[in-house]
Amino acid sequence: MYACNDYSSNVADCEHGDYEGQALPAAVTVNADSVLVVFTSTANSETDYGFVLDYAVKSYSKAACNDKTYSDQHLVLTDKPNNATGDDTYRASNVCEYTLNLKYTDQIVYVFNKFDLKQGDFVDIYNQKTPSANSKELIAHYDMNNIPTAVYTFDAPLYNIAGEPSSRFIIRFASDNMLQGSGFEFEYYGHRNSINQFDETEINVYPNPATSFVNVEVTSDKAQQFSASMVDMMGKTVYVDQFNHDGGTGTYKLDVNNLAKGVYFLHLNSENGQSVQKIVVR
Image 1 (cartoon, rainbow, N blue to C red):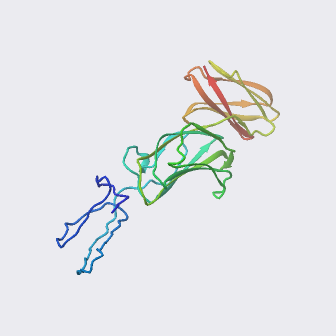
Image 2 (cartoon, one colour):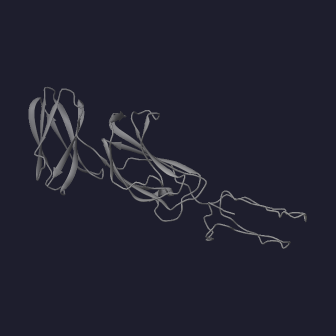
Image 3 (tube, rainbow, N blue to C red):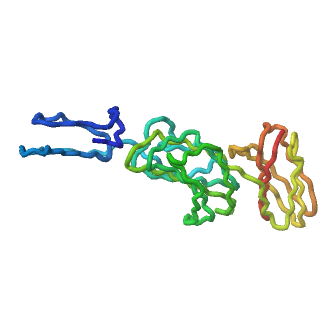
């Protein structure tokens, strides 16, 4: 008798009892959402009154993973509630979706640091091609017969939500009513490449790589005020500035001398548009 979802029994084959004769068995507790009871009679002519099985069902407390939306540029997601880690088994008959709503991100890089799913359980990854929730495109399916073994990269188009360029990915985890493993850990990075959405305005940023300053050359007949911010790979804003452009061609210097070496994204915004430029500081 197999209790496939038993979260507490250490019995190797999951069999909780094998009874015969007339002695009353002791009470048995099985932490599972289904139990198979098999009654077998012999082929001879001797019969008796049989048995009466009395049982009570209680809800079990093993928590389910939660549907949630994340905007972090880098994060580790797990099958556990509140993104906990550990080697305890995940919940049976469970489905949850993690939505990655990543601003200024047109590429996702991901890897599974851990993958221990059993037969019938899987992780699907979708790209949402437009703001409509019905535009999901399956880009990857992983299960015990298709285990992820590499670092994966996927490019996605940008679309606007509330005026901000965004990409959206959905990570869907599902477990069936059979055996459960110890789960998965999914680590992703959202990469933000250069975009330019200015109206009748040309932007040139140099030098790149930079060491102590970055020049922003603006060519536009329109007078406009620019806000500038530098964002690191973790999505944290580490530098904020602004400057006024009076029309024509002007060059404005941004000081990056205090920034640590690494990759950043320079966000430039005005009433006429916005741009994101990838900057390397050495």
